[in-house]
Image 1 (cartoon, rainbow, N blue to C red):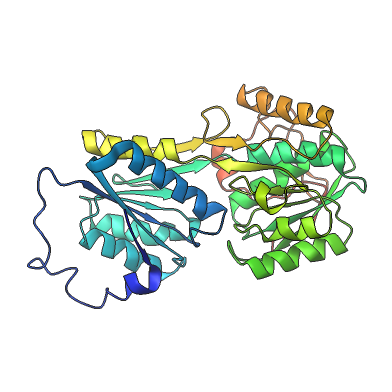
Image 2 (cartoon, rainbow, N blue to C red; image 1 turned 180 degrees about the horizontal axis):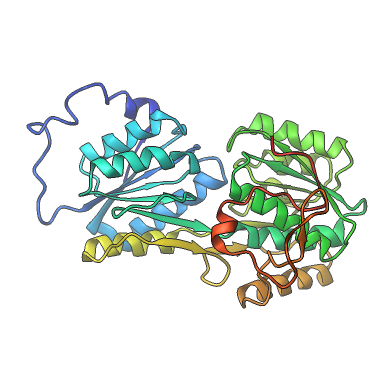
Length: 361
């Protein structure tokens, strides 16, 4: 494995060495497959990028000398990411994973220019012959969080530290609200959009503000443990994000959604090695193990049992989460009774359900 920080990696882009054919070593038939990963945050964020890094390590360990994996972290959703993708191509990577929504259009461009390279984009919606999509149904775990919060909240109002107003974040807020309302129909949710996936300072300030506004349970869709740490400092129960963050709040974390990428990465790399890779669109969840819940802690046993039952119902398809009737913030029905929202609509969701306070922008 090799890793380079963004500054040192992209600093090479102006030099001709990476692209010069005379400098590049000729590929050998027995050379390991070079696989690259690009992360929006630091691998030490203990959340989103950290969990992708755990997946990369799992794949590297499983496939051994057949592959050589590398990563670049702290890569902005800007032309900087396109430069990193292009440099990975120039240095011989044949499979490249981009792990943030804002990489999408840049990865589409690079994929079109390099049909001989396989690309995979996490959380996006634009696909091509050599560009696959993969994602997790995070909203399933958010619904379970909502069930727990609905039981635990004494005020009936919880806080949500949100990142950016893209569909997966909207899905998450809605799902938490629906989970709460399944327990307490009068429940409310307040959110603060920090307009960043990873900014511990802003995340922590948002958590403090939500608690000051009377929220007595916190959840988040941001990448650092800062909101959880703030909650613990105020003795407020809260949820971790993307990975089990229990070490940051041993007495206050209730559970956490855990994104499990390792099996997916291992299989997709195997597909390239076997010559069977095709462009697919994967959206996994509880049923296939891509989404898991951390142990239910710091709550009465009956609430933990209710949460576990919610996981079981979602896994079995008994609870689709987004099933009507659903009403928006004005009380207007946008999903009629008996209907389940299809994946195309979910993938573009920008409607907040009734009970959520605040606007997306």
